[in-house]
Image 1 (cartoon, rainbow, N blue to C red):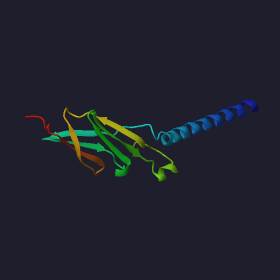
Image 2: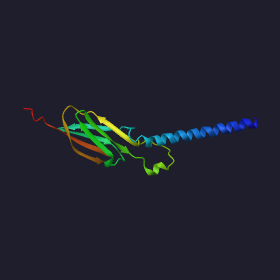
Image 3: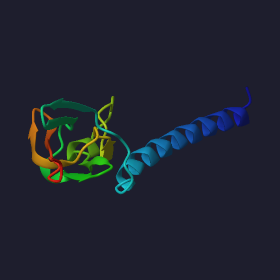
Image 4: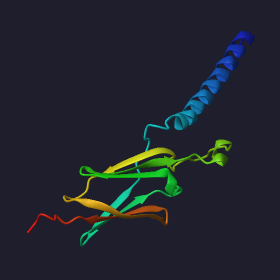
Length: 139
């Protein structure tokens, strides 16, 4: 192997490493730049008991102030943000499976008119209690 060939090979390896680092940096910065675009959906359980609907929305690590709930005739929307922890910003990441950033989930509700009666966090889940509104015009 000639000396020129070795220098070209080493230069190509260095460029590959730099490009890989740039790709990782773009991915990490993309998480921070997607502040307005939802990037994940939380899991939801929905069950009915009498005139009450109860929703459990899996949001471990999300503070109550970071969640917005909107109820209308089309259904229910839960949206908010799970911020990237400060410690994660400086860490070497070996595995990243828990989603971070903006989330949004639209949930279709069974037919009827509902009112949000209660909402609270419990064991890493947002609990929403909806009450079925009776039609006052019904006989």
